[in-house]
Image: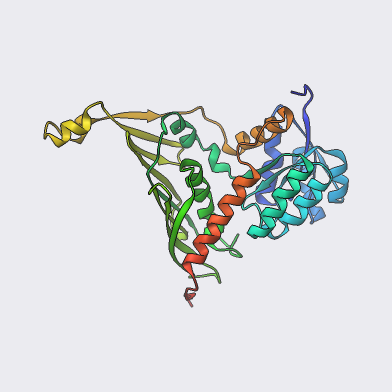
Length: 327
C-alpha cells in the first residue's frame, strides 16, 4: 500500500457533495486537492469552507487528482464518470449509479477497460446496525424493509424507488445472494409526476422473500429492517444504528412444539453493537483504502448496476399508475 495520502477531488458540491468534501478531511489516507461544481460560486464557497481549491473545469481537476467522488445529478453520472475513467481516475459514484441500466453497463465496462476502481455510493452498507448484525447473519430467508421520509422538493425528478427504495434493494441483494425469480409491486404518485409511495415483493430462486415499502410523504423518518433466518430474527433500526438479534436457543423450537415454555424461553436476546462512525466517512475510507491497496471495492460498480436493474424491475411491475394530485 502506498505510504502517501491519495489525492482526491469532489465533482458536484451541492448538499451531499459538500459533505463528501468536508468529510475527506476525516480520512487520513486521503488529501482533498479540490472541488469542481458547474456553479462557480458554489464551488468557491465550498472550497473556502474546506480550505481547498475550486477548479474552473472538470478537466483541470482531473489533471491533479487520482480519484474523485462524483456527486452530480443522476442524469450527469454517465458523462462525468466516463470522463474520469477515460483519464484513468478512480471513481466513487453516488447512487443510483446512473439514470438507466444501459448507462450503468457502459460505466462498468469503461472501468473494466481502464483497470480502475468504480465504487457505488450505497452508504447504507456502512450503517452501524448492519455492521453489528454482520457476524450473526447466515441464511436470510425473509426480509422486511420500511423506509419513509418527510416530503422534500429534492429528488422529485425520479420515482421513490430510485430515490429511497434502491438503498434497501441493494441491502437485500447483499443479504440474499441469489438470482431474483419474481418481482411484484404497486405504487402511486401523489404530489409529483413519478411514483411517491411504493411497495414491492421480491422472490429469489431459493424461495427467500423480501418485502419493501418506501414513501417520501411521511411525517417522520423511518428506516427499519427485519431479517428472519433459520436460527433467529433481527430487528434493526437503521436510523438509530442499533438493533437486536433474537437467537433461537438449542432445542428451543422442540421445546415450544412440545408445549414446554413460551417464546421467551426459546430465544436469547443479543444486543447488537458496532463502533460508532459516520457511514459516509466509512464509505470514503473504504474507497480510498481500495484504491491504495488495489483491492476490490466494498460496493462495486456491478453492485450498483444490480441494484439499479432490480429497481427498474420494481418500476416495471408497478406499471402505469394514476398520478393523484392534492390540488
